[in-house]
Amino acid sequence: MLSSPEVLWQAPFQEVVAAQAGQQLSGPWRLLLLGDGSPTRHLQLLSGLAVDVELIAMEPEPLAGPEAPAEVADLAPPLLRRQVWLRCGQDCLAWAESWWNQEQADRHLGQRHQPIWHSLTANRAELYREVDGLAQVTAPWLEERFDRPGPFWSRHYRFFRGGKELTVIREVFSPQLERWLGPSLGAAERSLTDARPGERSGLQHNDLGIP
Image 1 (cartoon, rainbow, N blue to C red):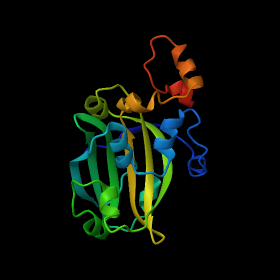
Image 2: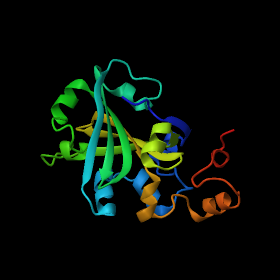
Image 3: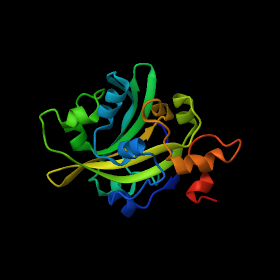
């Protein structure tokens, strides 16, 4: 099991749920990160290739650590934690981890190498997705697998069925998606970054108000 990425910056919860977060993002990236569509469906549509799920680990988690999204505390224990890479062809385009009640995981994750969205909608059951978090994160193992320097855009959300929380999912997206979506930052933010020679692409700590 990989350690969760370090969170460098996180948008206020109220801004995320009110769809006011991510003003620095370009339109396509804002839709990807804050929209309520299926990320695996989006990756398939963008790349033209099926999404392959590479299972990293799926293990019991007696107590969620401090790095877990706050919403994990609303899941009934005992918990299970799952981590995967999402690949389209040779490109690794995203990493994801999810927290589940053990009983719900046994019920919905029988096909462990299948995207969660496919598992949960196998019988065309109604689901509600609530996006709760937008963040910039980093980790050496993300940089190695994505073959890009961080930080990386991340989000987390919950699935509900019948008003009950099913799972909390955190996703981190590769900058390779700029091939189809264009730069992640809007024009104004890009001009700020371009004005600083030597800075790598992506949102910098000072842009986020981080000391």
